[in-house]
Length: 84
Image (tube, rainbow, N blue to C red; front, side, top):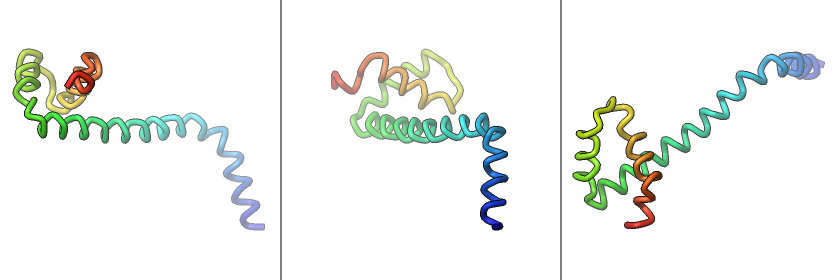
């Protein structure tokens, strides 16, 4: 009976929680995006392309926390990984 009451409460709250659940999905996508950023940054460092990216970042000043996002956008926009 307690479980039924509990699930009943959850069912009532589900309509209220539908909106908060959307950001949770975005957080999951964000986490995978963070992993992708780290993979790209690791590739950049391992492939010796860091000076190119450093030069671009110096030419385009951005916040430190946005540097990895900038690299991801640069790589995606130029398909840098495909050409090298």
